[in-house]
Length: 118
Image (cartoon, rainbow, N blue to C red; front, side, top):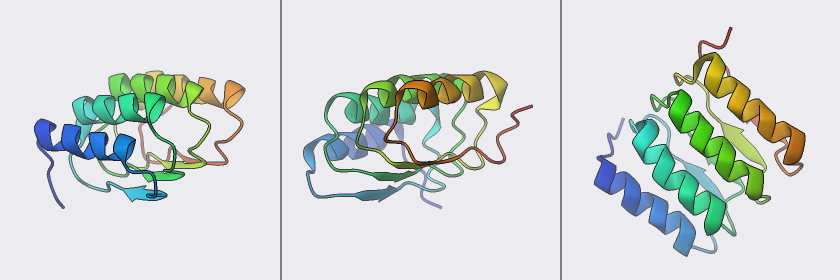
């Protein structure tokens, strides 16, 4: 359990945009929250060229973070596996993520379990 401050989350997100060899990125249980996932989403949308497996399990990501991540995934055809297990995205965030599946054909694995999606 490593809590990331928002400034640390931004630095980690920038690393995703700069690094061209990292293929699997696990940020499990880091308290990333919506603000951190927004910074990460920006890098995924505009700069990611290598990360194909992304694990954001147990990060208190809510519906707003899920919406921003969904927007990034609409234009990102690099990520093939995404785990959002045990977050707080609820039904609204779940709908946002599900719309990605209609347009993003590279995402082959998606875990939305334990997210209060009804």
